[in-house]
Length: 422
Image (cartoon, helix red, strand yellow):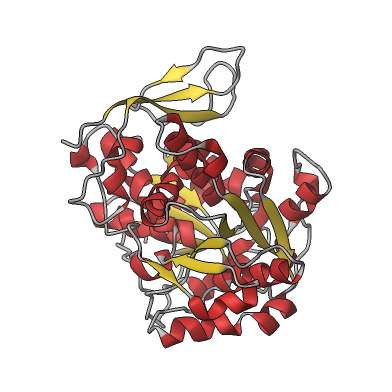
C-alpha cells in the first residue's frame, strides 16, 4: 500500500443539478442535465506511486478504475524525459526537455495512455463490441489494446489516412477497420448510429478520454518539478485539457502551488487551425459551421484533422485561460524549413521518428521556433514538450480495410451484416 485514501466519482458540471455517478458505469453526460462530466478525487493523497508499474498505472490512485486486477497495460507512459541541449539556441537559450511517449509507448504515440485507461474501464465494466472513430492514432491504439483482450471492435478512420495503418498494431479477425470516404466529417454521427442500431457500445466519453493525460502532468512533476511551459501539438486538445486536470489535482492535494503550474502552449497545423484562430479572436465556443468544408487533396498532416473541435473547444478555451496559455498555428512550408534540427537531434540519439507516418512533432517544434522568433522565450526558462508520435513503429506493411463506407449512403445495419459475413 502507498498510503493514499481516495474516492473517485463522476460529477456533472451543471451547478443547477446535483449529478454524481460512481465508477460502475460509463456515462457520456449528465442524465438529467445533459451537461459535461468530470472525474473528482476526494480524500488524502501524499504523492506516493505504485513503483511496480512501468506505466501510467504508477498513478493508479489518481485514475478512475476501481480494481487493479482490471488494469490493461502494455507499458504506456512512465516515459523517459530527455534534454535536447543542442536545440536551446533556437529557442533563445531556453532549455528544452521532451517526454518520449513516441519512443516508450507500444504503438509509438501518446494515445496509448488513453487506450490503456479506456480499455481497462471496458474490462472492469464488462463492455465488448466497441465502436470508435478517429483520424488514425486513437483508433489504432484502441484496436491494439482491445485485441490483447480478445474484444470485438469497429474502428472508423478516413481513407486518406490509410498510409498510417501499419501492421505494427495487433489486430484480430474480430477487430474491424472501416475506411471512410471523403465525407469523413460526418463519421461521428454515423459511428454513433452504427453502434445504436446494431446494439453495440460507442466509446468513449470526453472526460474518460482526457483523464489519462493527467498522468503526463504527474510524471513531469516528478521528473522536472519546475518548468515554465508545457507544449503539445494538438488536433482537438484532449492532451492539454487532461494535463491541466493533473496539475489541478496536485494543487488540490497540496503538492503544488497554483502559481507554479506551467503555461500551456498548443500548436496546430495551419490547415486545421480552427481552434487557434477562434481563440485569437476571443471566441469561447465553436459550431459545425466553423469547421473547414474543403481540404487540400494532400493534407500536410491529416491526423490533426479532428472531428472533435466543436465538442472540445470550450474546455480547451478554459484550459488556456486558466494556465495563461498560448495557442498558435504554423504553415507547412515553415515546418519544412525549420524542423530539421529536431529530426537530426532524434537521429543522433538513435530515437525513432517516423516522419513518413506523422509530422506532429515537427509541427510542434516549428511552432516553438516561431514563438521564439517573436521573443516568447528567454535563457532562464524551461520548456517541456510531449513527443506525440510516431515512433517505435518499424513496420512498412499496411492493413487492408475490412470495408469502405460512405456516411451519406451506406446503411449501418447492412454494414454490420457485411462485416459479420467476412
